[in-house]
Length: 538
Image (cartoon, one colour):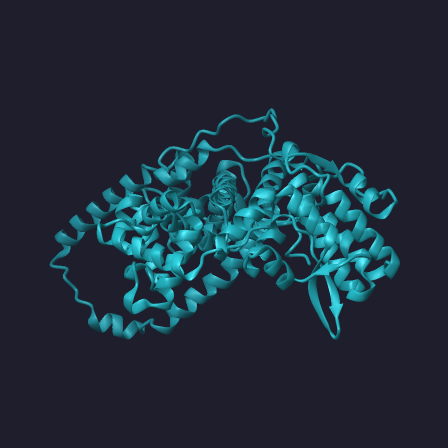
């Protein structure tokens, strides 16, 4: 039942009544729900407690502020009646009034059984009764009469749809073939013949389509008889994405413009339905004013520190990270709540859609929600990239590539954003730090194992190396050049970092290498702080 209902509260009510309500109560509630169903307006909104009271006779304490959209209520109450009748398993002989089957309605109104199924989706309330040993769909006479009164034009049009005798059908097909020879497509033929014969365009279109399917060797529109493969459908969608016009694509593939539009919508829907939507659910998502509260403007928080100035000499990528300020706990709660709520809305919308009959407006809305969620995710990633850099520096080894480690840490950050449960009240930086460090704990030892596996011995290195030194003067000259290059590199560091390296390794004339403790006493800090500065400078 969960996947069929559009609102979880009505689904929960139906589940309770199916499980626990006695038979006579179930029958009474079916009648109450059907009467209420025809009083609702799709554009209106209704309080859940009022709907529940009309159906069951009692006013629940739960969800006092919950509001249900009229369209959702109409859809779910029809399912409510069907599910209760399925649970009641009432024999058709005990029905309070005559019951019609699908075949009965098809014969009575001269329509197909598929048309009767469409009427059910349009509001014809159905129930399930036991016909002997089988449970089948049935319709109370009052339900049928009410639907006919409310949809008289549709019922008459459906009857007219099938009232074609053999001679009329042959004449219609003859005219259609003649128009097709002059280059008209099936949609144009249906429109012209509908005007000249007084039949509906749908009747003409269905008649031609049925004939072509039954006589593919003599089809009026042979290009349109064979179904399109999934690859061809994707090809049509890609052509439209690249800017091809509907008219050109329809002519090239021998389809009507409406079918091209439908293919575009279906392929787009299939892509969105294949995309996983995982989110952290929260009770606040199910309140009546959730959208207005959660999607409101972000909180305005005065931060103690303004925009940080990047240290001099940083690469452009690292310097750009200082342009985005770090998020406070309140800001993190807002953005993670919004991120998960947008995906919650997308999942709710997708669950209510049929991928084979999805509407373009619903597809656009689903795409918009997912795109907004991705935008929020990108913002959260950018706001926490400095965290990745700081952790990568602590795990940097002489053999590792710093920017490769940052890239690896960014992937861990993205996964952490997807899995972070903001409802627990923890700060995201704490959760992400452990996730990134755990990833480094796996990846760095693995890299070392690979390096050790292919490392050669020192003897092989010495044997394969060549000594190109000529004489002492050339060697001295090379040392001078190396020292000048080294001092130029040290000139890019901050003053304190440069002085610490000069003291530690005695890189200037007259200086002897010093221990961490000696350098620390010179600068007035601990030897651990000197080690940290030295590691960063190196």
